[in-house]
Length: 209
Figure 1 (cartoon, rainbow, N blue to C red):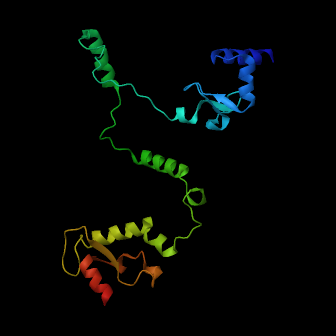
Figure 2: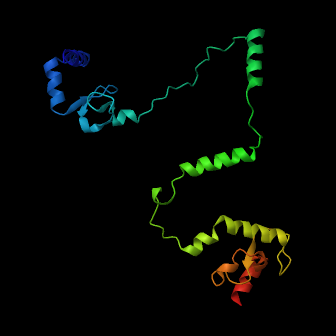
Figure 3: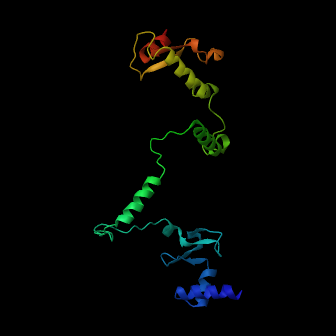
C-alpha cells in the first residue's frame, strides 16, 4: 500500500499538484494525459489492462496524432564522409549474401503451403463480417466456381480461341457458351462437348433465337 501511495505522490508532484489535489481530481473521474498534460474525463482514454487504472496514459486524441519532423533543408551527418575500403568490402559481402527473391518462382510445394495457410486464416462463411446468411443462389455459386473456370479454359483451348460462328480470334470478348442451357441441364454443365467458343455478338444472336 505504501508503494502505491508513493507512486501517486510522485505523479502528483510531476503534475504540479499536492497529493490531496491530485487524489481529488482522480476521484472525480479525471485523468491527466501524459502527452498534452491536460486533465480530461476518464472516458477520453482508451483501455489498457496493463496499467493500474486500466486506461492508456495518453488520451484518444494524442494517441492518433502523429508528429513528423520536417527534414527539408537538413544536411545529412554523413555528407562528405568517405567509407574505407574495408567497410566497402564488408557492405559488398553482406549484399551478396542476401537471398534474392525477385523473379524467383515458388515450387509447387511452396505454393500449396501458401494456399493452405491463406485458407486457414480466411474468414469464410459466418466468420466473415460481410456474411448475410448464405443468400447467394446455387446457380451463381456454380457459375463462379473453380470447376466452371477450368471448363471455360478447356473449351477455349479446344477451339483455339476462335469464335466458331464468325471466326473472330482477337480475344477479349470471347464467351464459352453452353449448347444445352446451364440452368436446364445441370448434369451437362462441366461436359466439354456441351460448350462452344463464340464472340459476344454471336452469343447475343444465339440467345435471341
